[in-house]
Amino acid sequence: MKDKELLKGNIAIARAAINSGCSCYFGYPITPQTEIGEFLSSEMPKRGLGYVCAESEIGAINMALGATSTGAKALVSSSSCAISLMQEALSYAASDELPIVLINVMRAGPGQGHIYPCQGDYNQATIGGGNGDYRTIVLAPSSVQECVDMTYRAFYLSQKYRNPAILLLDGMLGQMSEGAVINENPYPEVDNSTWRLDGAKGRKSREIHSLEPSQDKLNRHIFEMNKKYQLLEKEEVDWEEYICEDAQYIITSFGTMARSAKAVVNYYRQKGLKFGLFRPKTLYPFPYARLRELAQKTKRFIDIEMNLGQMLKDVRLSILSNAQISFIGKPVGDWLKESEMISAIDNIIKD
Image (cartoon, rainbow, N blue to C red; front, side):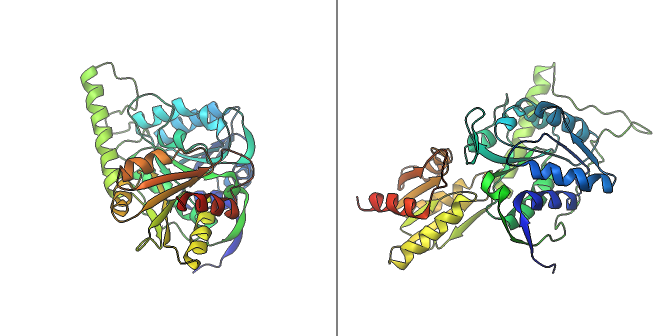
């Protein structure tokens, strides 16, 4: 077992990416994720790996398209408004079945927004801004240790399913430091020898492309992609439950915000009220089925996010009409404090 280190979230991600076998990085400096590229600009050349500080965000993500088509493990990192510029290329990557890993360290929006940490990119990540029937794998860490663990998982799942994977965290987690262990990558290598473009020597040439002139071929391709997403939803859903066994009130929250929500659960438990916390670790695939089970025995759900209710729609789709649901959130500014959440919840549960 390796020793625990004091690590900033961004640095933990960068180190885990190298351990994951990342062979090339393409990025563009933007707060609050710049340390990822800064760290890799020093470390990757030492290892003979590829590092490019691109001329633009669009340049970075399209370079990754080319690199992953050769079988390379490519990483791109950026933040919010810059991720918006990459949506077309993510649609291409999904259609081309290219396993790009994208890190989004969220800042406030819309538009240029501000450098304050926020959780306003949930819709962008889980629904996407590109065209067509596609999905991206989305993982949401809540600690620096999970930044490490989920970076490993993002590389593995992207390779396993040949699909873009997003690690979605807010600026607070990217910038904060806490103890974490950089263990070895626990996942096996995924064989990509059957599809990568590495030179047609002694074999038939291959193609990777999004444009399909035949309607029948395109339909078949999209249906095959959908089978992959169905398998993801069956096999790869992940979440955390905290004291939900007997909970009459369940708080739903993701990422760093869930850490503060856990403290609120402890506060109400000490007062004799049966509160629990449900935190999705995979935002896509979302744990609809487990939330629906909990809704059969829970009085009320309280969704808490650092936005105006983006995950709320998925919570509603999960619980349907089986329980009441309330929302607490704000889009930007001071992080939602424990006292603010308690004050809002007191007003909710007195009704």
